[in-house]
Image (cartoon, rainbow, N blue to C red; front, side, top):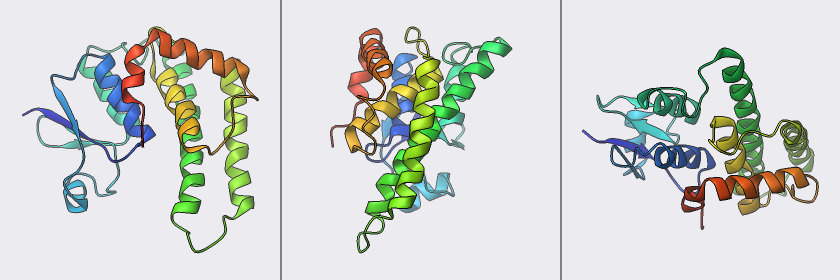
Length: 199
């Protein structure tokens, strides 16, 4: 059975997984597609969230952090998550910061999407933007490697380009070091562009 990664829309968490599959040359082993229905994804993931990876035995793995750990494991380890303890936990800490940026950016998007009959609640949006700003400031001082990419850099690249895509936070003028880093990441990893959302 070919493994299958279930995605939906321009999910930045799904993009982390889609890029990693291509980067780790697993495209011949893992197909990428959308759930057939809400019931379909609920059968594999009670949370009905993407990304969800259906593995060879029919079991499902979620969320993106677990999927990336699995992809690194099946390719021998140390490919996108360092093996040595100090480097491993530094990388995972920064990856958690990148995920936090994405979570706050998504909450800003959801505030408008799921409350269309109400004006956005600005204190809530400001609270999320504050988290984004602080995390970007921290990551600007601790830039992840771009080549080879690890989970921290993969997460940061997806977070920055997701904010470019959805416009939740205008980060570019405030963090020129991250602008340069993202340019370097794209040059070092040309397949990253192939996973970029278009709509």
